Each structure stands twice: as structure tokens, then as C-alpha cells.
Length: 348
Ligand SMILES: O=C(O)CCC(=O)C(=O)O
Ligand SMILES: [Fe+2]
Image 1: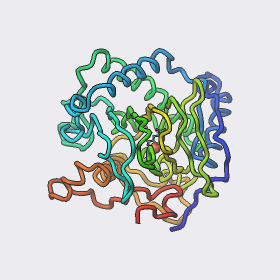
Image 2: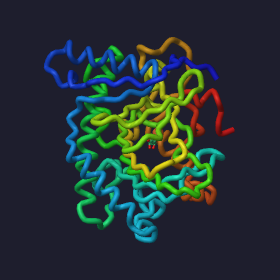
Image 3: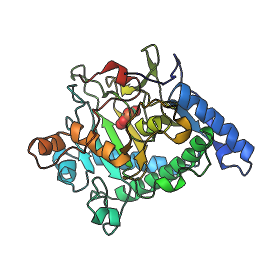
């Protein structure tokens, strides 16, 4: 398959101070945007510092997450994602399998953008959207909601930076994420010295526009143009941001959804990716200014893409598809068909 991605043989991921995005002076915002754009084109990954997310918010989420996963499995299974109406809740180890791959060595709790039950999209039965069902754990809902809101707001600001970097109106994407199927995942990689050689998470690209990630330990690795895995360890005060499939499509491959993985766990690890998506029905296709006449990407609704990927990776959803209770949206792509993975057909 042809590709336009210009990802380079990078050996490190740049740190970008984004405080200028909050400046009243356009030139300050443009300066940050240029750095964001360069990283998004050449690497698809960057660290951001100088963001306004409060340290107490981060600590609150860490504490709530540890308390959640410390519960017995049978307690967590009361929140099982397979029993939820809108694909949220506890994801036990082995639930997610990419292609024919080995199950990831992790458990997770998935939180959605809070869309009320009487919202027209929820009333209309849109997959993935609806209110969260919170576990009855003291302070969990408050801590998770606060983190979600602050980091989602950061995402909104970053999208303005990416818009500037793409030569678009700064507010181009502003109205596109009002009630999106954006998830915050709380991921726990337990350490088990006896575990077989399982990866924390197998190689993949993220499906959405971009991801804002916080992790407490090293383990994340990013694939460069030479096929080498580059370490992306946590940096104090920074989030890792990476481009997802949908921004790769919108920019016709100018921004690249770079493959990444979490290597075999050598110590217990927690991580918190927030996947910033546009609203479910947003039609994703190359923006006119990136259209060079060659069609590399089919137009698709972002929510359909995300739902199709979920139907192909979560065991409880795969079973429902096999039983004929659910069906894949038309024009579904196989998992891992973006970024460098599309050249490697890792799932074939
Ligand atoms: O845990 C991490 O550092 C990365 C997680 C990730 O890539 C994902 O959930 O998509
Ligand atoms: Fe990821």
C-alpha cells in the first residue's frame, strides 16, 4: 500500500512547551504551533510541558486508580465492560486481542465523555455514547471526572495548535467535539515475575485524532522509520501526545499516526491515555488543502471507525458479532491499517 507519511529515523521525542498557546499574541501561538506541526509530521509523538493541568488533579487520579485496581477481581467484574450498555467500565486481562496477537498483559477501566441519557445521540442509540456507570468507590468518580475535564480541555487547546500548524483557522476544529466517543483509560500493568514473555500492549496506532497520555513508569516504545523501537519514558510534568488515525486521514498523511507498544512489564505500571476524538458522525476524509488528487484514504465517520475497531478487538463484542447480535459497520477497516503498521500487515 502506498504511504505519504514522512516519519523520520528519529531517536528521541521532542519536548514542547505549549504555554505560548495560552498567550494573547498570535505570534506566540504560531511559534508553538510550528513546533507541534514539525513533531506531528516527522515523528507523530511529542511531549508537552507548560500545560495548565493541576498536579493535584493528576495525583487524585493516581490515587483513585490504585484503589480501584487493588480490589479483588470479582469486585471489579461488577463493572465489567461486557455488561455495560455503551462500552465502558472494567476491562479484565485477556479481553482485548489485536489480530491473532498474544493478549496484552494489562487490565483497564474505560471512562467515556459524559453524555447524558436524554442527549439526542444517546436517545438515537449511537454506539459508544451515554452516561458513565461509576464504581461505588469513595472519591473515584470525582477524581476521574476532574482529570477527564482538565485533560479534555487541554486537548481542545492542542487541537487549536494543530489547526494553526496545518494553516487552518485556529478554531477550525472547535465545534467538532461536543459529545465525542473519547475515552479516558485507566490502565494497570501488573508485574508478575512468572509471566510469559507477553508485551504490555502490542504494536498499534491509536484510532482517534490524537492521544494525551500520562504514565508513571517507562515501557512505552515508538516505532521510527528504520523500524527501531524508541523509548518514550515519562518526564516530570509532561504529557505524551501522539497523532491518531483520524488526523492522519484528515491531513492525507502529512501528520502520521505512529505505531507504538508497551514492552514486557518489568515493574508494575499505571498509565492514563485520553483519546481525543471528534463527534461520532464527523466525516473524516482528507481536508481539501491536503488533497493532492491521489485517494489514499476512504472517507469514514469517526465513530464508525472506532466502533468497528472495538468490535474486532474486544472478546465480548467479537462474540456478539459471531452470534449475529451485532454487525460491523460498512467500510470497516482492519485494525492496524494506519501509520507504519499499514506497511507491515501485522495482523495478516
Ligand atoms: O500505557 C501506555 O503507555 C500506552 C497505552 C496505549 O498506547 C494505548 O492504550 O493506546
Ligand atoms: Fe496507544
